[in-house]
Length: 274
Image (tube, rainbow, N blue to C red; front, side, top):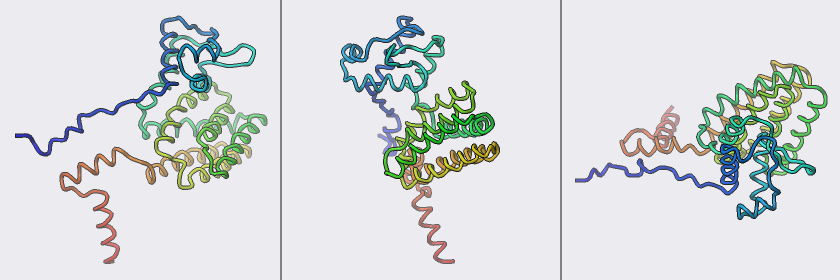
């Protein structure tokens, strides 16, 4: 006799739907691995790529923009899009990070990002010249304008952090922070971490970090940046979607264990009797 408690859904696996820009990036990665595309080589024109991939030029543009954002290619009006002069292994590693961003958990991201971003703020405070601080201010102003207009701010937010990293004058640290970019954007999109006033609070926290950098207070900048990252994660835990909690909730309900709803109701009853 079949077990009525047997849950077939536990054995089902999540389907990963690949977006066209990801498929383009995957093909470019394959060509690099096969050494058909080499470091320093110019890629075909955007129009040609769109025709060969049979997609819109906008889709090609998005794929190239992501590759450029993370230092895999560079684009200029004179020379077009050229693969950076990096080793094959480095290029493939960078692309693999973009394509496999879903494998990173929020906890992993917050641990590493908190440590690197805090160090970035400290070093930027110690090393940034006036021009770099002005670039940080400019990026922050763009985010502030977007936040005040209640518009999308995730890319502006990420740009602020990249400008701080650039001001450390440590290319390795900047690259490590840039590598987390796909994970940060995916995480923020997936869980809408900018909702419920968070983007306005984040903009205020950025202002405080910049002021510490301008006053040349490295310990304060480091503390404020770590606090900023922690607050974003706390906001996610309060308001975001947590599939792992939902699974625990459903399993607990089946076994008759206290669930979040039951615990909340019991807590409220206790307060009312006090």
